[in-house]
Image (cartoon, rainbow, N blue to C red; front, top):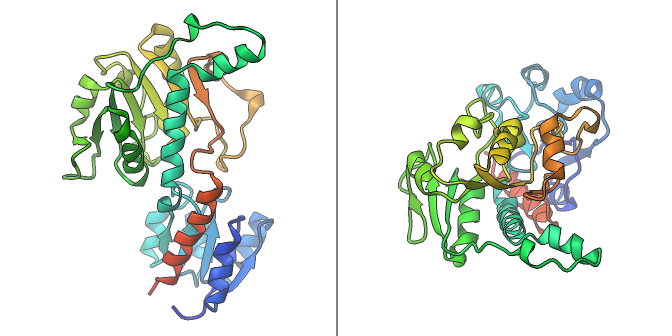
Length: 314
């Protein structure tokens, strides 16, 4: 690729801009630019690198007359108008290969913590309480885990699960013939019929917003556990709570919440609904602040993957 002028609008591992600079490209690190400053200057850049705090809209793309690529440091692309960008010949890049292992391990950690009451038991022991029977655990071995979405995240999660002696069922609307010796490719109906645990690994699109809702949950034959490390708005929290109260949902692991701000790093705690108040008081829910893919290793791996993809642009 010929010499490019690249705008970084969010912080990344230094490996990314160092690799691009070494390859002969100019990298401007302008993390604090206002929306107006971005709009006034974006026309001089060949590429922009973002994380999640900025939306790349049709209007902004129209101002970026020299843009060859938009790179998202992470997995999701919902803050980019990808279809419009690609219609303008702009390549849209992301790096799910960089944080898929982190997400998979985090999902396993949350599930095991939930099954073994570790958060509650840890708190009680620290308070001098030695309560064994109430904290009796549930074994993962022998359970059926349903995975929806078999991209980078879903496949990495399945890989981690295979040593636990579980039955792994996977549904992906857009992929076929991916079954192997440790997972079974199935229809959504099979997951409804057999799953004890549901793990969601889909992007956020118009199709997947509130994908997990009251009707969806009640199509399961068994009472279930739900893991969401995908996007918060893929799950309707009010419907989750309703089904936790009825006993249909036995517990949940939520790394993401539908109340997150666009940047994922902010939550408006002053105006959160009753469903959230229920969740934060429930010891049947394991919560984390959208950090499943956020490890020391993934931070560097994402940078390496993005650098490789940018440098391979023709």
